[in-house]
Image (cartoon, rainbow, N blue to C red; front, side):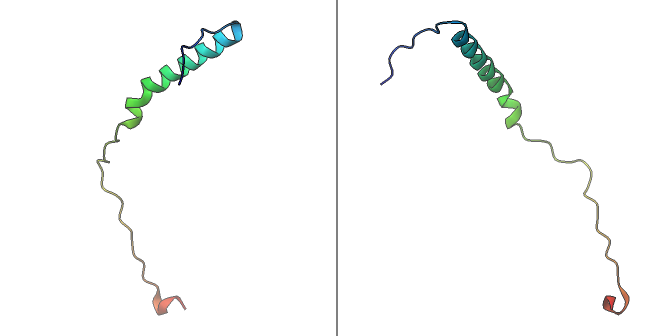
Length: 58
């Protein structure tokens, strides 16, 4: 079981905690945009041309 967390001691621990908090905030802020579904394309897909080769290409 986890107990109460101790606050960071020293500049390095404060910097690490601040960087982790900023990273988590940025990830959570961008999560809704990452989950959005892109819209379907408006134009039809190009068609493929079939080319006939005389004598079966021999």
